[in-house]
Image 1: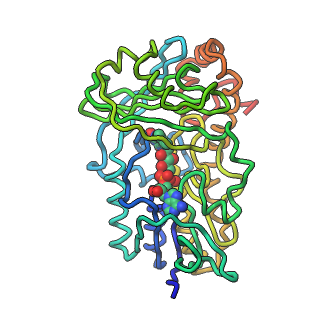
Image 2: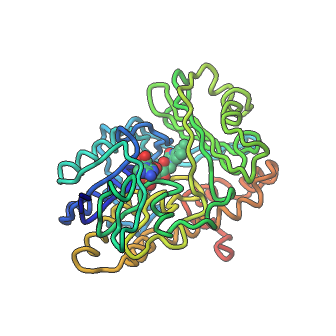
Image 3: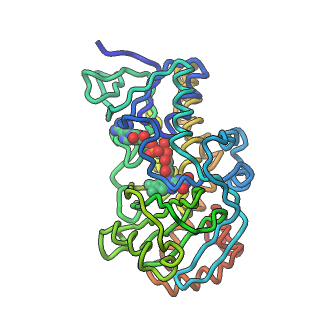
Length: 387
Ligand SMILES: Cc1cc2nc3c(=O)[nH]c(=O)nc-3n(C[C@H](O)[C@H](O)[C@H](O)COP(=O)(O)OP(=O)(O)OC[C@H]3O[C@@H](n4cnc5c(N)ncnc54)[C@H](O)[C@@H]3O)c2cc1C
């Protein structure tokens, strides 16, 4: 016989786990599924996570959720003080911006433990989908073995199977221009400055995206590239990443002697949140709702925040009949403006990105201040009227 709970969360990443904690604290019976066999493994992420004061600047209306940035220090591998942006022609722009480089496995396992301590259940090694069983919601590998739920949170990353089955993720979002494919090595034996995170732009190694060196402490760094196939001549992420490591004039000396671990790859939505992020009884959070800041690719913090909001609304829905539209209203209040601006800016930048010289000139024109604005989801001075 099928089990029955109040809330099923599909996906035990930051979005799903933070949602589960909030719903459990409000008294819901919660079951979490993940297709991974170990929470937080493997990590497919640069693990860059701005400190609280930077997020207070980036998302000034997210006050109620700022506690998510107070991560335990044992889940922090490194601390960066600045961001350096490097244009395709090698011009450097550097500004103060403090961030942790996380141990995501540790962080997610800590939160998963909290879920279990609060009475939630986590079922691993189980890829799930959403089924409608005569008007009842069922989540599981199949309809017969699934778990019945009053409300469901799709937190299964991008592209979300559950959000698709609920009609929240629609085909029109799934275009090559809206999706970055990211490739990354965790590298060791590097001599890079451990206090600076670098973002490199150039069509030779990161068409439609950027390359990054995110120092992770003790001579290690997450080194990766994001590309969009609408910008690239070939669909060869490993080729682009290896070029970034070994042949690119901007990086090859810096990364010389570095030892790459196994390559990881994953897709990321970069055209702003889905048009609608909920249906009658399902909410999508984090990547499942495309909650990634398009001008920087950050999605950990927005997954945590949307997860928390959805967990709270799930409880209000089950206990007081609050409609799930309240979820969308609330996340828009907290980060809607920044997501909108960041999406518009990324679309604007697309016009220059195919041409390295033009993009270099655009960065020079923006200057350090303007570049910081774009990365922190604000319209640079003078651009407000067209954003
Ligand atoms: C290479 C790379 C580098 C990145 N670097 C950064 C960075 O430095 N900083 C930053 O803020 N963001 C970064 N991001 C983005 C960030 O990783 C995501 O935005 C963030 O993980 C979103 O969290 P989430 O919980 O929504 O989804 P996820 O972390 O993707 O979690 C989804 C979970 O759902 C599970 N799942 C998927 N499908 C199913 C299914 N059918 N059934 C059951 N479980 C399922 C998955 O196993 C996974 O555990 C990066 C992304 C990539 C790919």
